[in-house]
Length: 112
Length: 113
Figure 1 (cartoon, rainbow over the protein chains, first blue to last red):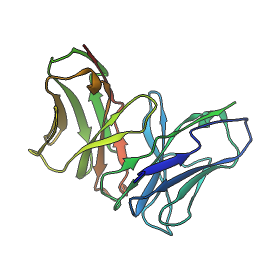
Figure 2 (cartoon, rainbow over the protein chains, first blue to last red):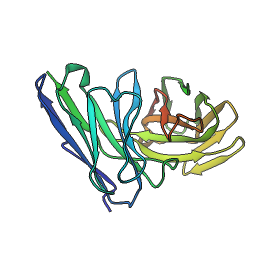
Figure 3 (tube, rainbow over the protein chains, first blue to last red):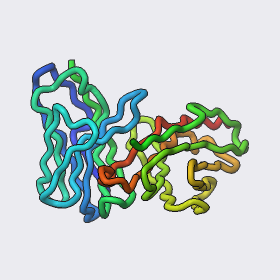
């Protein structure tokens, strides 16, 4: 039982490049989330998916897109990376929208 | 807008020296208050959920309590392995909360042997 897994662990991009962060959970959870964590800003919600087939914006969605591929997988895409998107990205999941959330190990992204 | 303030920002303790971390919050209808532990380079690890004032939860050396305006994480006789950043988050019941967790900045706890 791996919980929430994320790939890659580290990534360096040049400004303007695109990439997709992958997240998968094996807890049969319905809801999934993408957060970013920046020094002094805490964890902030980018997008969430309340259930399979639905996605919605969080606090800081600009510059990102998401896909809920199936119940297990939720990906985050940066279409044209900018230095302001340098951050640590965490995926999380919960049984239902208002239950406790369980986090993955994170992806450390640097945009040059 | 939901807000969470944690204090102190950093806390250094000697092994065995008990203390408390504070989490003050404002939220439109509290659905839940969550405590997480985060080790360097790792994702937050879920510790507790508290739902209503007066509720208490315990796990090993940690005890979380909740009032209408704040929560405390009490650490009894801490050990060096309790060193971590402790995060508090609230989940509001307001119309636009959609299950969003609002996190505090965290308290960095260091326990010296």
